[in-house]
Image (cartoon, rainbow, N blue to C red):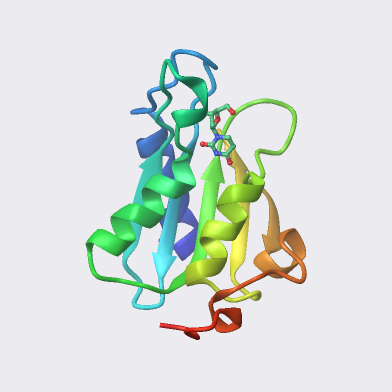
Length: 136
Ligand code: THU
């Protein structure tokens, strides 16, 4: 199985667990770390709408729980005609753990539809090396 197939499978499975009663829009995300491990997540909405979290944030949290820190590539799956590209906040969340060359695959329910780099989706990003403390 290629890394993209494994990510698509993990993200699609995570999407089935979405808690999205308000938007009705289920999203799954899966990321591969530099060690090849895969972590997935789904969106978790809330009656207080802004408190809801994205699938990508959940996948990143799962990675951090496992003690890993480096995203090699990430895949997001959602349905509909429009590409389900990550929101601005999630692009910044990815930037914390990924370089501008990291690949972001955007998939529909039948497979990958487009691939971008993080640098293309978040140009001139503010990242860990720009903080006073420097990268961790
Ligand atoms: N959503 C994600 O989980 N990831 C994305 O990349 C786009 C949007 C979620 C947030 C919310 O629960 C629902 O999709 C509708 O915006």
